[in-house]
Length: 262
Image (cartoon, rainbow, N blue to C red; front, side):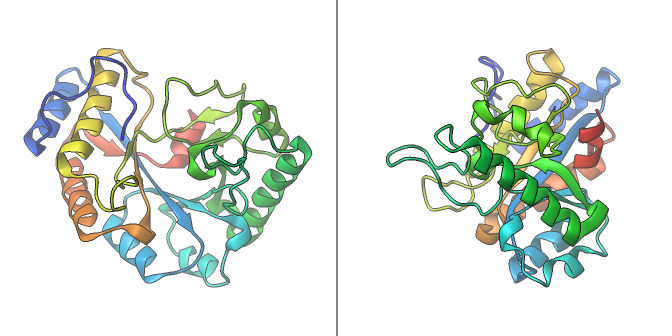
């Protein structure tokens, strides 16, 4: 589900509508940027291999859980410069109080413990992946308490990637907001594909919001996947999206490193 400014959602949601929206970008002399984030990587699984084969040379931000890294993952990714490793929290453990939404970093946690986990995660990723690891935090369940925002720079985090929301707290100076906008997994149903109509509605709606000035044009429209639960329908949607972007002169994929430099 995407979070869009009121009145910007796509009226229709078919593939020709996406092409038409990209055409509008081209008519203004602009190129629509998109980026791709995939979560919950820990090992060189068959599912991850399938995702990377699908992505090909397209830049991918892979959110890796630092405390759970298997020994085979660094070597598996070493020959894939198009893959940027992002910090997916520390252990992907839920520390929220009973009844609250899941979060590894809820406001009820001890700040010193949070700071230690953020630093440990950065150090472990740097040790395992070297320059392939970017200082971008992807908080599990896309939740990070605003009270801990000052800890990001202390831990060497330069970017924060969550699900875009109008209720999200502003990131501190020096930290880039690198959000995603369309999650392709239907978590509240069967954890399968959300469907072409829903996915395209979110994608077209955010692109349109950027083009019309209802959202920041310089940001990239972010697609979120989870390779461990990706079904055939999701893969089919991504395959067609990749082909559509590849064929259109007014669309391109950007890397997490490029977004971090903006």
